[in-house]
Amino acid sequence: MLWQRLLQPVTKMNIQASIDHWVRPEIKALSAYHVPDSSGLIKLDAMENPYTWPETLRQEWLELLHKTNVNRYPDPQGAELKQRLRISMDIPEDAGLLLGNGSDELIQMLALTLAGPDRVVLSVEPSFVMYRMIALFAGMPYQGVPLKSKDFSLDLPALLAAIEQHQPAIIYLAYPNNPTGNLFTAADIRQIIKAAPGLVIVDEAYAPFTDASFMSEVGRHPNLLVMRTLSKLGLAGLRLGLLAGPKPWLDEIDKTRLPYNINTLTQVSAAFALRHESVFDEQTQLIRQGRSQLSAALNGMDGVTPYPSDANFILVRMPASRANEIHAAMRDQKVLVKNLNGSHPLLADCLRITVGTPAENQAAINALKAAL
Image (cartoon, rainbow, N blue to C red):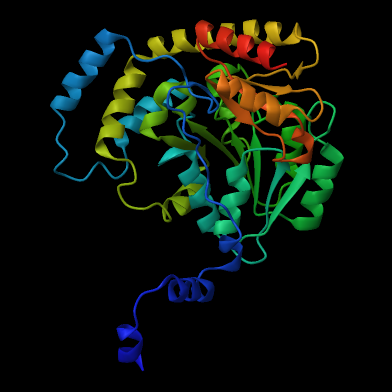
Protein backbone atom coordinates (compact mmCIF):
# COMPACT_ATOMS: atom_id res chain seq x y z
CA MET A 1 0.00 0.00 0.00
CA LEU A 2 1.17 3.55 -0.79
CA TRP A 3 0.52 4.85 2.77
CA GLN A 4 2.55 1.99 4.22
CA ARG A 5 5.51 2.80 1.97
CA LEU A 6 5.29 6.47 2.93
CA LEU A 7 5.49 5.57 6.62
CA GLN A 8 8.67 3.53 6.18
CA PRO A 9 11.77 5.23 7.64
CA VAL A 10 14.18 6.63 5.07
CA THR A 11 17.33 4.52 5.01
CA LYS A 12 20.35 4.23 2.76
CA MET A 13 19.09 0.79 1.82
CA ASN A 14 15.67 1.83 0.53
CA ILE A 15 17.13 4.92 -1.21
CA GLN A 16 19.62 2.69 -3.02
CA ALA A 17 16.85 0.25 -3.95
CA SER A 18 14.89 3.11 -5.52
CA ILE A 19 17.99 4.33 -7.38
CA ASP A 20 18.67 0.81 -8.64
CA HIS A 21 15.13 0.61 -9.96
CA TRP A 22 14.86 4.00 -11.65
CA VAL A 23 18.28 5.25 -12.73
CA ARG A 24 19.41 4.11 -16.18
CA PRO A 25 22.16 1.47 -15.93
CA GLU A 26 24.45 3.37 -18.31
CA ILE A 27 24.19 6.46 -16.07
CA LYS A 28 24.87 4.46 -12.90
CA ALA A 29 28.01 3.10 -14.53
CA LEU A 30 29.41 6.61 -15.02
CA SER A 31 31.46 8.79 -12.72
CA ALA A 32 30.53 12.46 -12.46
CA TYR A 33 32.79 14.86 -14.36
CA HIS A 34 35.63 15.60 -11.96
CA VAL A 35 37.19 19.04 -11.58
CA PRO A 36 40.21 18.86 -9.23
CA ASP A 37 40.68 21.40 -6.46
CA SER A 38 43.24 23.94 -7.63
CA SER A 39 43.41 26.05 -4.48
CA GLY A 40 46.92 27.38 -3.94
CA LEU A 41 48.19 25.87 -7.20
CA ILE A 42 49.40 27.30 -10.50
CA LYS A 43 46.44 26.20 -12.61
CA LEU A 44 47.58 24.83 -15.97
CA ASP A 45 45.06 22.02 -16.42
CA ALA A 46 41.95 23.56 -18.03
CA MET A 47 43.04 25.56 -21.11
CA GLU A 48 42.00 28.89 -19.60
CA ASN A 49 43.35 32.31 -20.55
CA PRO A 50 45.71 33.15 -17.64
CA TYR A 51 45.33 36.92 -18.08
CA THR A 52 42.73 38.99 -16.26
CA TRP A 53 41.16 42.21 -17.53
CA PRO A 54 43.06 45.50 -17.23
CA GLU A 55 41.83 47.57 -14.28
CA THR A 56 40.45 50.35 -16.49
CA LEU A 57 38.38 47.83 -18.46
CA ARG A 58 37.22 46.16 -15.25
CA GLN A 59 35.97 49.47 -13.87
CA GLU A 60 34.08 50.29 -17.06
CA TRP A 61 32.52 46.82 -16.97
CA LEU A 62 31.45 47.22 -13.35
CA GLU A 63 29.78 50.53 -14.19
CA LEU A 64 27.86 48.79 -16.95
CA LEU A 65 26.77 46.01 -14.62
CA HIS A 66 25.69 48.62 -12.08
CA LYS A 67 23.21 49.95 -14.65
CA THR A 68 22.00 46.48 -15.67
CA ASN A 69 18.66 45.34 -14.28
CA VAL A 70 18.13 41.66 -13.53
CA ASN A 71 14.49 41.75 -12.43
CA ARG A 72 13.34 40.88 -15.96
CA TYR A 73 14.13 37.81 -18.04
CA PRO A 74 17.02 38.17 -20.48
CA ASP A 75 16.59 38.71 -24.20
CA PRO A 76 15.57 35.19 -25.26
CA GLN A 77 17.50 35.43 -28.54
CA GLY A 78 20.44 37.56 -27.40
CA ALA A 79 20.07 39.79 -30.45
CA GLU A 80 22.68 42.41 -29.54
CA LEU A 81 25.21 39.79 -28.52
CA LYS A 82 24.63 37.80 -31.71
CA GLN A 83 25.29 40.85 -33.83
CA ARG A 84 28.53 41.51 -31.97
CA LEU A 85 29.57 37.87 -32.42
CA ARG A 86 28.87 38.01 -36.16
CA ILE A 87 31.22 40.97 -36.48
CA SER A 88 33.90 39.54 -34.21
CA MET A 89 33.99 36.07 -35.73
CA ASP A 90 33.23 36.86 -39.38
CA ILE A 91 30.10 34.73 -39.35
CA PRO A 92 28.44 34.81 -42.80
CA GLU A 93 25.43 37.13 -42.86
CA ASP A 94 23.06 34.47 -44.17
CA ALA A 95 24.12 31.86 -41.60
CA GLY A 96 21.90 30.88 -38.70
CA LEU A 97 23.35 31.51 -35.23
CA LEU A 98 22.46 29.78 -31.98
CA LEU A 99 23.83 30.56 -28.50
CA GLY A 100 24.47 28.05 -25.76
CA ASN A 101 25.56 27.95 -22.15
CA GLY A 102 29.04 26.96 -23.26
CA SER A 103 29.60 24.53 -26.11
CA ASP A 104 28.45 21.71 -23.81
CA GLU A 105 24.84 22.90 -24.02
CA LEU A 106 25.07 23.15 -27.80
CA ILE A 107 26.30 19.55 -27.98
CA GLN A 108 23.34 18.62 -25.79
CA MET A 109 20.89 20.49 -28.06
CA LEU A 110 22.28 18.67 -31.09
CA ALA A 111 21.82 15.32 -29.39
CA LEU A 112 18.27 16.12 -28.30
CA THR A 113 17.36 17.25 -31.81
CA LEU A 114 18.67 14.16 -33.60
CA ALA A 115 18.47 11.49 -30.88
CA GLY A 116 17.17 8.02 -31.63
CA PRO A 117 18.17 4.47 -30.68
CA ASP A 118 19.69 3.91 -34.12
CA ARG A 119 21.12 7.42 -34.55
CA VAL A 120 24.90 7.21 -34.16
CA VAL A 121 27.26 9.95 -32.95
CA LEU A 122 30.73 9.55 -34.45
CA SER A 123 34.01 11.24 -33.63
CA VAL A 124 37.71 10.57 -33.59
CA GLU A 125 39.58 9.40 -30.50
CA PRO A 126 41.07 10.79 -28.43
CA SER A 127 39.01 13.96 -28.60
CA PHE A 128 36.68 16.07 -26.47
CA VAL A 129 35.07 13.69 -23.97
CA MET A 130 31.67 15.43 -23.99
CA TYR A 131 30.90 14.22 -27.53
CA ARG A 132 30.72 10.68 -26.16
CA MET A 133 29.26 11.57 -22.76
CA ILE A 134 26.34 13.64 -24.07
CA ALA A 135 25.55 11.02 -26.72
CA LEU A 136 25.24 8.53 -23.86
CA PHE A 137 23.06 10.93 -21.85
CA ALA A 138 20.70 11.22 -24.84
CA GLY A 139 20.61 7.46 -25.42
CA MET A 140 22.51 7.63 -28.72
CA PRO A 141 25.12 5.02 -29.73
CA TYR A 142 28.62 6.49 -29.95
CA GLN A 143 31.34 5.34 -32.33
CA GLY A 144 34.95 6.45 -31.94
CA VAL A 145 37.55 6.13 -34.70
CA PRO A 146 41.17 6.13 -33.45
CA LEU A 147 43.58 8.73 -34.74
CA LYS A 148 46.94 7.63 -36.13
CA SER A 149 49.24 6.76 -33.24
CA LYS A 150 52.32 8.46 -34.67
CA ASP A 151 51.06 12.03 -34.96
CA PHE A 152 47.34 11.99 -34.05
CA SER A 153 46.34 12.78 -37.63
CA LEU A 154 43.09 11.54 -39.17
CA ASP A 155 42.94 7.96 -40.38
CA LEU A 156 40.80 8.98 -43.35
CA PRO A 157 40.17 5.49 -44.81
CA ALA A 158 39.04 4.25 -41.39
CA LEU A 159 36.81 7.29 -40.91
CA LEU A 160 35.18 6.97 -44.31
CA ALA A 161 34.62 3.25 -43.69
CA ALA A 162 33.02 4.03 -40.31
CA ILE A 163 30.77 6.64 -41.92
CA GLU A 164 29.68 4.14 -44.54
CA GLN A 165 29.02 1.45 -41.92
CA HIS A 166 27.31 3.49 -39.19
CA GLN A 167 25.62 6.28 -41.20
CA PRO A 168 26.07 8.72 -38.30
CA ALA A 169 23.56 11.43 -37.55
CA ILE A 170 26.33 13.62 -36.10
CA ILE A 171 30.09 13.72 -36.68
CA TYR A 172 32.26 15.87 -34.40
CA LEU A 173 35.70 17.07 -35.47
CA ALA A 174 37.58 19.36 -33.08
CA TYR A 175 39.77 21.77 -35.05
CA PRO A 176 42.35 22.01 -33.45
CA ASN A 177 41.77 18.78 -31.60
CA ASN A 178 41.60 18.50 -27.82
CA PRO A 179 43.62 16.99 -26.14
CA THR A 180 46.19 16.52 -28.90
CA GLY A 181 46.40 20.15 -30.08
CA ASN A 182 46.88 19.40 -33.76
CA LEU A 183 44.94 20.57 -36.82
CA PHE A 184 43.53 17.93 -39.12
CA THR A 185 44.08 18.34 -42.86
CA ALA A 186 41.38 20.65 -44.23
CA ALA A 187 41.01 18.60 -47.41
CA ASP A 188 40.31 15.50 -45.31
CA ILE A 189 37.61 17.33 -43.37
CA ARG A 190 35.96 18.46 -46.61
CA GLN A 191 35.96 14.85 -47.79
CA ILE A 192 34.29 13.80 -44.54
CA ILE A 193 31.66 16.55 -44.92
CA LYS A 194 30.92 15.31 -48.43
CA ALA A 195 30.64 11.67 -47.31
CA ALA A 196 28.56 12.33 -44.17
CA PRO A 197 24.85 11.47 -44.36
CA GLY A 198 24.09 13.71 -41.37
CA LEU A 199 25.59 16.77 -39.73
CA VAL A 200 29.30 17.49 -39.40
CA ILE A 201 30.18 19.75 -36.47
CA VAL A 202 33.60 21.40 -36.75
CA ASP A 203 34.38 22.42 -33.17
CA GLU A 204 36.63 25.49 -33.21
CA ALA A 205 36.93 26.01 -29.46
CA TYR A 206 40.60 26.98 -29.88
CA ALA A 207 40.09 29.35 -32.82
CA PRO A 208 41.91 32.25 -31.10
CA PHE A 209 45.18 30.30 -31.21
CA THR A 210 45.23 29.26 -34.86
CA ASP A 211 44.73 30.92 -38.23
CA ALA A 212 42.78 27.96 -39.64
CA SER A 213 38.97 27.95 -39.65
CA PHE A 214 35.94 26.57 -41.46
CA MET A 215 33.74 29.53 -40.54
CA SER A 216 34.01 31.00 -44.05
CA GLU A 217 32.69 27.69 -45.46
CA VAL A 218 29.44 27.83 -43.50
CA GLY A 219 26.70 27.90 -46.14
CA ARG A 220 28.82 26.17 -48.79
CA HIS A 221 27.95 22.74 -47.38
CA PRO A 222 24.35 21.93 -46.43
CA ASN A 223 25.44 19.73 -43.49
CA LEU A 224 28.31 21.78 -42.00
CA LEU A 225 27.93 23.54 -38.64
CA VAL A 226 30.77 25.40 -36.91
CA MET A 227 30.84 25.55 -33.11
CA ARG A 228 32.85 27.98 -31.01
CA THR A 229 33.19 29.09 -27.41
CA LEU A 230 34.39 32.26 -25.74
CA SER A 231 35.89 30.27 -22.85
CA LYS A 232 39.39 29.96 -24.30
CA LEU A 233 39.42 33.60 -25.41
CA GLY A 234 39.30 34.68 -21.78
CA LEU A 235 35.61 34.54 -20.82
CA ALA A 236 35.38 31.04 -19.35
CA GLY A 237 33.41 32.30 -16.37
CA LEU A 238 30.62 33.60 -18.61
CA ARG A 239 29.87 30.18 -20.17
CA LEU A 240 29.01 31.20 -23.73
CA GLY A 241 29.16 29.09 -26.87
CA LEU A 242 27.80 29.53 -30.37
CA LEU A 243 26.76 27.39 -33.30
CA ALA A 244 26.70 28.71 -36.87
CA GLY A 245 25.28 26.96 -39.91
CA PRO A 246 22.44 26.84 -42.42
CA LYS A 247 19.45 28.64 -40.92
CA PRO A 248 16.93 25.81 -41.50
CA TRP A 249 19.12 23.50 -39.39
CA LEU A 250 19.59 26.08 -36.64
CA ASP A 251 15.84 26.74 -36.52
CA GLU A 252 15.22 23.06 -35.75
CA ILE A 253 17.98 22.80 -33.15
CA ASP A 254 16.71 25.99 -31.49
CA LYS A 255 13.52 24.14 -30.56
CA THR A 256 15.49 22.13 -27.96
CA ARG A 257 17.00 25.23 -26.35
CA LEU A 258 15.70 25.97 -22.89
CA PRO A 259 14.08 29.44 -22.66
CA TYR A 260 16.38 32.26 -21.56
CA ASN A 261 19.45 30.00 -21.56
CA ILE A 262 21.89 32.93 -21.81
CA ASN A 263 21.47 35.08 -18.73
CA THR A 264 21.43 38.87 -18.77
CA LEU A 265 24.84 39.30 -17.11
CA THR A 266 26.50 36.98 -19.61
CA GLN A 267 24.88 38.76 -22.56
CA VAL A 268 25.86 42.22 -21.32
CA SER A 269 29.36 41.18 -20.28
CA ALA A 270 30.20 39.24 -23.45
CA ALA A 271 28.97 42.04 -25.72
CA PHE A 272 31.02 44.53 -23.69
CA ALA A 273 34.14 42.35 -23.88
CA LEU A 274 33.82 41.96 -27.66
CA ARG A 275 33.61 45.75 -28.02
CA HIS A 276 37.10 45.73 -26.49
CA GLU A 277 38.35 42.83 -28.56
CA SER A 278 41.81 44.34 -29.00
CA VAL A 279 42.54 43.58 -25.33
CA PHE A 280 41.87 39.89 -25.89
CA ASP A 281 43.77 39.90 -29.19
CA GLU A 282 46.82 41.14 -27.30
CA GLN A 283 46.39 38.42 -24.69
CA THR A 284 45.99 35.80 -27.42
CA GLN A 285 49.28 36.90 -28.99
CA LEU A 286 51.00 36.60 -25.62
CA ILE A 287 49.64 33.06 -25.28
CA ARG A 288 50.83 32.15 -28.78
CA GLN A 289 54.29 33.47 -27.94
CA GLY A 290 54.23 31.58 -24.66
CA ARG A 291 53.26 28.41 -26.51
CA SER A 292 56.33 28.71 -28.76
CA GLN A 293 58.63 29.32 -25.79
CA LEU A 294 57.13 26.50 -23.74
CA SER A 295 57.36 24.11 -26.69
CA ALA A 296 61.02 25.00 -27.25
CA ALA A 297 61.81 24.39 -23.57
CA LEU A 298 60.01 21.03 -23.59
CA ASN A 299 61.80 19.99 -26.78
CA GLY A 300 65.08 20.61 -24.97
CA MET A 301 64.30 18.15 -22.17
CA ASP A 302 65.57 14.60 -22.28
CA GLY A 303 62.94 11.87 -21.99
CA VAL A 304 59.82 13.86 -22.89
CA THR A 305 58.07 14.33 -26.23
CA PRO A 306 55.95 17.45 -26.78
CA TYR A 307 53.56 17.37 -29.73
CA PRO A 308 52.97 20.33 -32.10
CA SER A 309 49.99 22.43 -31.04
CA ASP A 310 47.72 25.04 -32.61
CA ALA A 311 45.82 25.42 -29.33
CA ASN A 312 46.63 27.01 -25.97
CA PHE A 313 48.05 23.81 -24.52
CA ILE A 314 50.74 21.27 -25.32
CA LEU A 315 50.39 17.51 -25.07
CA VAL A 316 53.58 15.97 -23.66
CA ARG A 317 54.48 12.29 -23.46
CA MET A 318 56.47 11.39 -20.36
CA PRO A 319 59.00 8.56 -19.95
CA ALA A 320 57.27 5.17 -19.98
CA SER A 321 55.11 4.42 -16.93
CA ARG A 322 56.08 7.65 -15.15
CA ALA A 323 53.20 10.01 -16.01
CA ASN A 324 51.29 9.49 -12.75
CA GLU A 325 54.41 9.93 -10.67
CA ILE A 326 55.49 13.06 -12.55
CA HIS A 327 51.99 14.56 -12.37
CA ALA A 328 51.95 14.06 -8.59
CA ALA A 329 55.46 15.49 -8.22
CA MET A 330 54.51 18.60 -10.21
CA ARG A 331 51.43 19.05 -8.04
CA ASP A 332 53.60 18.79 -4.94
CA GLN A 333 55.53 21.72 -6.42
CA LYS A 334 52.24 23.65 -6.71
CA VAL A 335 51.83 23.20 -10.48
CA LEU A 336 48.59 21.54 -11.63
CA VAL A 337 48.54 20.05 -15.14
CA LYS A 338 46.16 17.52 -16.70
CA ASN A 339 46.99 13.85 -16.34
CA LEU A 340 45.70 12.01 -19.42
CA ASN A 341 47.48 8.74 -18.74
CA GLY A 342 44.87 5.98 -18.72
CA SER A 343 42.14 8.05 -20.38
CA HIS A 344 42.79 6.48 -23.80
CA PRO A 345 45.36 3.97 -25.09
CA LEU A 346 46.86 6.58 -27.45
CA LEU A 347 47.41 8.91 -24.49
CA ALA A 348 49.46 6.50 -22.40
CA ASP A 349 52.12 8.38 -20.39
CA CYS A 350 50.74 11.79 -21.49
CA LEU A 351 50.26 15.02 -19.59
CA ARG A 352 48.64 18.15 -21.03
CA ILE A 353 50.08 21.53 -20.05
CA THR A 354 48.02 24.69 -20.56
CA VAL A 355 50.02 27.71 -21.72
CA GLY A 356 50.10 30.23 -18.89
CA THR A 357 51.87 33.50 -18.23
CA PRO A 358 55.66 33.54 -18.71
CA ALA A 359 56.12 33.06 -14.95
CA GLU A 360 53.62 30.17 -14.88
CA ASN A 361 55.25 28.52 -17.88
CA GLN A 362 58.66 28.77 -16.21
CA ALA A 363 57.24 27.27 -13.02
CA ALA A 364 55.86 24.36 -15.05
CA ILE A 365 59.24 23.83 -16.74
CA ASN A 366 61.06 23.92 -13.40
CA ALA A 367 58.57 21.54 -11.80
CA LEU A 368 58.81 19.10 -14.70
CA LYS A 369 62.60 19.16 -14.68
CA ALA A 370 62.62 18.45 -10.95
CA ALA A 371 60.05 15.67 -11.35
CA LEU A 372 62.06 13.99 -14.11
